[in-house]
Length: 405
Image 1 (cartoon, rainbow, N blue to C red):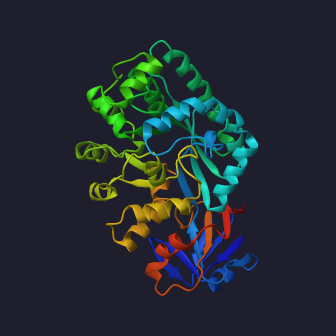
Image 2: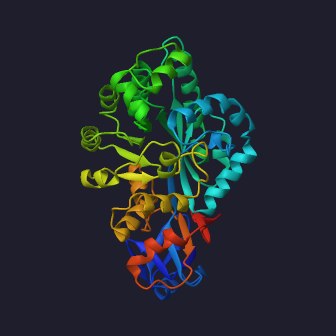
């Protein structure tokens, strides 16, 4: 048994003082240090440093480990030039992204307090790394394929990767399904995959309306994607529409990623069908996709998470870097309220979306913690979320299932 005694603790959506946490693999009790020591006299007591704050471990719902080798290779600024650069350099980037590099990437995430992450896997090459990393991993096997001449082969490969991740579930892997996007997945195989998700109770993620080019292609069969599909696939018509794609998920609550170009009607539909959204602020900025209007998500009560996306469209997978970007991007929101919402977007909200036994400091929850240290004593408790986001680069301690990592 361990008793962790910080200066402040984030519990029940507010910050408290003079409270400690007793845990082994799960949280056993939350009380004053004195009472916990009386209850567990043989427990090891760990005092947080001055101005320490204890959070539930952070959850990064959307990233691509397979592209961790990218630094200066891919082109940023607009979505289509970036996509062209991905296709041109994909094989080289994936080939040089070996296990050692992906393991380092996981360790880097750990230093920013990420105890669970959602890995979008196109090829399955990172499964071994995800089995070994101390973090819990929601392993999203990605389905792609819009050309009927190849969809069966691609679907068979998807099934092989999915079953491999299910076989690895005893090693901390949570098998799941990712749909690449409406423009790249044929409705026939989309239905097959969603049937599996429903029958086997698997979580689903899907890129959706990331760019204006995607919207123009799906809506009007025009824009930059027209030349793209003619060049690479000899196609001049999309395989689905925005409405058709969205309605395919009616019976499968889905974590849609980006959704920057969705209109009010589509956001209302997402809310109606109990879907959620992964918001990747830095990726959206670097690819010129625009700003996700989180004020509309708040008004519609759409749950959203903050995620880093992969290093193919970001400079780091540090969750604090992402939170700071979100804080500045959504400049019209109340600073204090937005800060707490952003903390929830990497803790309790994703835990609820993915039915994880974590994300909150609460008795019975997994003992996943991120302990941070503020540079000085906060003036008021209500400012701690904001000061955390502004001043934290790395955590002081991180625990997963009660083990310090």
